[in-house]
Image (tube, rainbow, N blue to C red; front, side):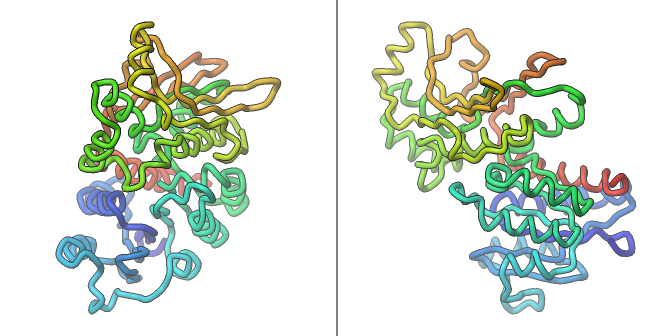
Length: 348
């Protein structure tokens, strides 16, 4: 930090990164009034749009306009650099690294290495990428502690909904003993639409048009996304030290219209349920389709809404519901971690 400026580097600049940039523009004055600090984005690195570096601060409005017009960064501008995300993480002068690159669900890389590079340089880090939390949380947490810097990751599960912050900030001295939830909105939507009589392929196409079903939806349908989120939750909240491979996983790929209707006859609905608990002193994790009674809280989670219920020893069970999020909620999760870093920088 120099001259009341906080320098940030952003790795990945898809929909979340752009929405985050818009928030930075919108809230610039309020941040200064609250913290007496200016936020300067000194690097933005992407895989397909190019890389920008400017130690005095990148013109975010200009960058967003270039992307609208050109669909990539303007190579004719002096900010444009031919360097990789790892080179940014290792060499650019910044105070906070934002890891917003796409998830690599089977390894968490290269996001893990990006964050580790920042932490080793005694830089703070924020991740919206669940891979590092699902695959290497303890390593990164301990690295941050060793180097006396902050590492936050609120956006990795349920977008900007305060789940990790809830436990960390308001459930102090509580021990989490169980989590259960519906964490993958794609499968929730698919199961509901199939129940309404729509064909599987028709449902997938509709979800793609609405922007929450990936081009290749297999990671959602086969339960991998839910397994990564479950691993992330359990690693942070229960010290599980597991990976998605340790989650007993079954997706919805074999669920049929007939099965859904049979469940309805029993007053049940089928949902893809994420679960973590303790058996024989060990944290166990499961993701699988289950029949849930229609009067239960979980059965009433509709469409792209998500829920997690956290059971503790002192506070009982607390449930958090995120209602049909848009990209702005995800960006706010990243923004809230920025504000948390700014609030806590002086305390470490």
